[in-house]
Amino acid sequence: MIDSGLRDRAGRHVTLRPVGDGNWRAVADIAPRDDQRGWVPALAARYLVLTMRSDVWTSLAVVADETVVGHVMWGVDDDGSRWIGGMVIDAAEQDRGVGRAAVRTLADWLSAQDGGSVVRLSYHPENVPAARLYTSLGFTPTGAMEDDELVAERTPPS
Image (cartoon, rainbow, N blue to C red; front, top):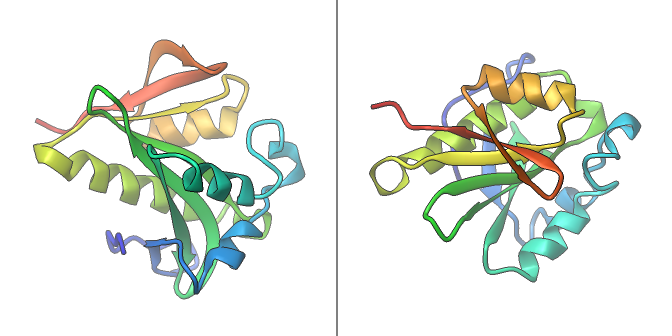
């Protein structure tokens, strides 16, 4: 479990947990709002399959108190940089600070690995809510593109 002690706006404790026998169905059923389906799949199940078939990505359940409310995955690139990808917060759980707590928790944990690492993520340039969230958490666009998405990074504090 990855736990930074953060809470959402309702006061629920947000943690990131491995996906396994006890929660994989709840994670697979996570669905975004309809207006987000241009940027993320209709169900988080697609990300679970990707992580099962990849040596790069690891899926995590986003949990508020004891309820699965989302999915996020992380990986390590060839250059050693850590990546956040595949975040989906269930439509009914959005606008409550869950996504913010999840990204901050994972970014802090990833950047602490190996004595401080750059953390990267990508988002579609037209996904204004994602751009606002990531910028507010210290991610800066690099100008690079990855699969039609803008790459942003956060460097660890010196």
